[in-house]
Amino acid sequence: MKNASHLTTVLGLNSRVTLALSIVLTLGVICLVLSQVGAEEPKLTQSGNTQMAQQPPPKQQKKPPQKKKQPPPKPLDMIKLEASFDEKLFPIFEEQCANCHDVGEAERGLQLLEFSTFLVGSINGPIIEPGKAEKSKLFQVLQEGSDPHMPPDEQLSDEDLSTIKSWIDGLPKALKSKLGKHDKDGGTPHLH
Ligand code: HEC
Image (tube, rainbow, N blue to C red; front, side, top):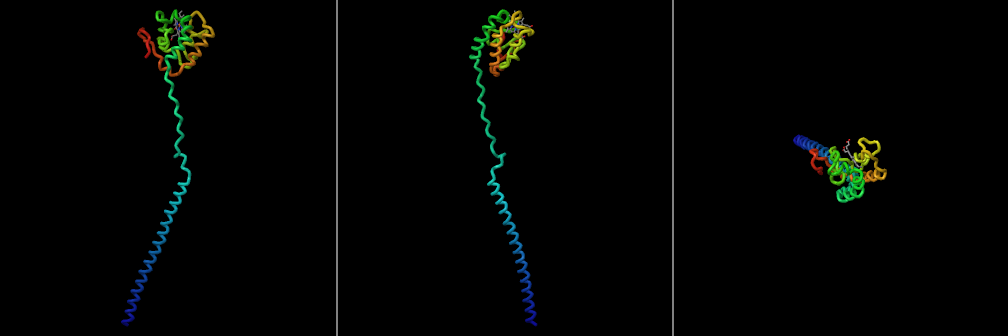
């Protein structure tokens, strides 16, 4: 009996050991399976990454093609503009407008014989819209039937009209910044 109980004990021990072993084994298998699954995942991610890397970069990441830098606007060549004023407009003004729009007799404060005072305009402001003859008071008052009409009792020739029109149309828009208001106190016109 002693032996038997010993055996039982041994068997018991053995069965406990077996149980323990099988638990350990089961846990081991579970661990193994889990570790396999775990190992799969990074593989998937990795292959995913590889695919991503092989794909061409999304369009958003592409740098937008840099806009060609526009050349900076040419600085105003006032000397050249004054020379063209003297050449094209002065002869007309001297002959047709000087009686009433010169230093001594400046109707509406408008002095037409100097480029600088011409740019100032009248007491109402500039008489030109650079680049747009049709919108310029200077050109408007020269049209037949305009009110007021300049010169008051005469009509400029078509040739003079087209000379003045193309001169204003050819002016750089930047000249607008040089157009000033007349000194309302009646003083000498000046550029602002
Ligand atoms: C006989 C005088 C006389 C002559 C010549 C004359 N003007 Fe005038 N001008 C006037 C009078 C007066 C006014 C004001 C008219 C009004 O506002 O009713 C005036 C106004 C103007 C205005 C409008 C100014 C403003 O902003 O109110 C312009 C522009 C002008 N003249 C341009 C000219 C040009 C260009 C010529 C020559 C082609 C000329 N004038 C010839 C008398 C004259």
